[in-house]
Image (tube, rainbow over all chains, first blue to last red; front, side, top):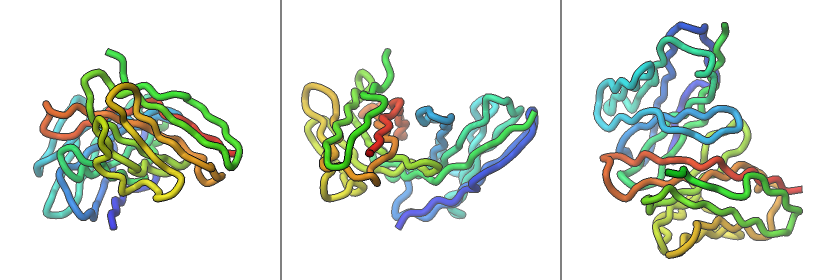
Length: 110
Length: 116
């Protein structure tokens, strides 16, 4: 079977840094993606890691360790608009389906 | 450049009726994916299609569900004889056939199906 584990909820303060971890066990692996979804909205792509290491995109960074089947999303300088659910997702192949985790709901306190 | 379009945005059906969900991918995208999301859950892959071909339907229930992506027109996800357990948000995503080294999927706004 396929499984991705991430915390169900995380709370942080505006302006702080938060890290959302993800471990995965899947029958295939091409890369790890992260998606953001606001309540009632559509998932939107945030980042992708195909190789080990850190990818930085503005306030968001994502890390992957293939040997540990582990990755994380790092959000810096948190803003209230970052309150959303964040999903890690395994890309099974270049064009194939994506397997999503159950999501981490991020609550941001003023 | 319009994003992925889905309609209807909300659909109410009674048990036993048919639900037809439509998805128009982004211009230039030839890959379409359908996902189902239950409240407080992640997205569950259902089916992956290219024009006129079903590439992977491993996530789609064998009965009552079907999908197509014809040469002309939108992709259709069809649910026959709906049951209450089919109530969910159904998202469509599209991606280009080439260009990036990875599969960034662009999601539509979803269709919220409620079965009474």
